Picture (cartoon, rainbow, N blue to C red):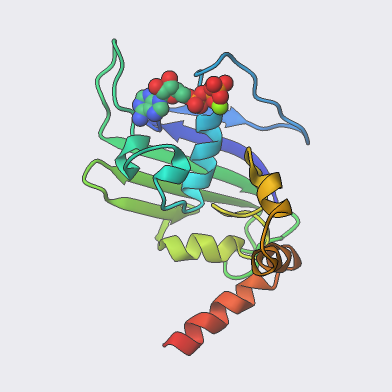
Length: 183
Ligand code: ATP
Ligand code: MG
């Protein structure tokens, strides 16, 4: 699954709608301290369903909405969209025939979060389900942040097994079994 494009509007320091095109196999983001590099990765994990504000370096989830600057008023809505190339059909299920898969999340100040797959309203679960077993996800190994390598090295055996199961694509079946047996 190749991430082709990130569209941001009102997310953290990205006040005006903007698009980031990720061309090629290797993309580096460079810039001075505080220019918003980490905010881009926060945006990616946020769309994929991250529900902990702390993981996104905020106090509450509403902290991801642009909260104003010297020259701009705070906004009332944050929106992030990821566009994935699915020509290799890595995604299984109803969305597998689509050559492009777009995932979008929006948040209003009242706390309402909405999720979309290819512009169709879906549940948060539908997004996490779509990527289970691919390594892509709010806590998937596709995003390796500072400190994660040492966390893997120091992980307890059960935790390490979790990473291996996600890499092997087994975690999705474990999740489904858990759901079936808890019903
Ligand atoms: P470094 O090189 O130090 O890691 P960085 O490029 O990763 O810097 P970020 O952490 O992505 O920088 O961006 C921090 C900036 O984002 C800060 O200036 C902060 O004020 C701004 N910011 C974060 N949340 C919001 C928000 N809700 N509204 C407006 N600006 C925000
Ligand atoms: Mg940073």
